[in-house]
Image 1 (cartoon, rainbow, N blue to C red):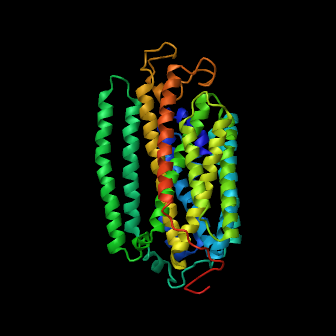
Image 2: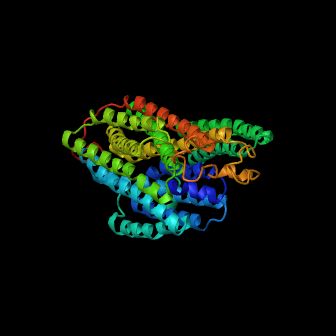
Length: 499
């Protein structure tokens, strides 16, 4: 929903950097909460975690709905990210607690069918609501839906699932939380992503004579990147040497499958979210409305559902994933390749096929990576290991959105005509037009006679660069994925060495 509305919202606030910040603010907090979610719900219980995250999701979306400034909508997205990230990972833990591995793929696929349904409906509903009554009402719509989900959680999820009985008091449970490691991880991510967005935000708003803003932005990037690297290093040291119960136990990385699966998830998310936040721009700059764009994104959701259910069913029938793994990785890469070759004149059916391929590969990969990871560790470590996988997915998504957003806006700033050089653009003295989509000619870039427009050329170059970047990420995911071991799937639950 948010990716469909991002162009409208960024134009409303006259700041193109909001396209990436709306995604990265959500994913930064998701990345922070997901490594904690496994350990915290081991201590406090799955139901408590799900209800807390539901509350955060409601509050965050309400803040977005009433936001009057760019900063406030970013804060709202961050709060919603805490809820969304926790809901995403904790629901997976509940399934792992209750379902044997051989059947786990099927149920993961069934859950992803609903995920795909939400993804498809989100684009359609977000687009229609934005066009008819405004984007704020789309955020408001999420609150009652989340309340309904929370009621279901209260009645359906047993309070005893994974509740730690060895820490009976609230204080004793708090002592087991790795607060320092969590703080270092969040700080490292914020420093990295703020550096990337600050650098690009300044350069994208400059005009030809504004050299100081560009130089200042690179200085900020040069300061924040080393700080981020130092914080990541400190996080690793704390987890390895000082944390009594680390949120990311480094010992699990000794098994080849764990780092291979995590890196595959990271690169795959970089590619998928790069496309998720820029394919809607491709459609809208081409000339489609926001509501039409939502409809055009449905094949991606259908592909996710098909990939998850297909791969899950095959795992249930065969007991392994040796053949499905390379197939879905290749399909995912081919989808990214298709977008890298697209132009304004590409036939209308082609992007739909590429979206389905991306969804099929992404959905199938989610299932394979999760099951491969669960077969590589003991049952007692499965929730924590799953949270690490989800953290890598979210970090990859966050980095992908920030880097691709930086690339898109930098290429756009370099290739858009400088204010005052082209009389075809009204009010050439208004430099704020560089932050919106006012350089798109009437009717869109796919309209006959507009394909060679100077503004369309600039957007085409920027989008081609982003799609090539997504192809590079997808190719890296393919290479890492081939390093994952093929383990046999158990037919029963296994706890403490007993089936």
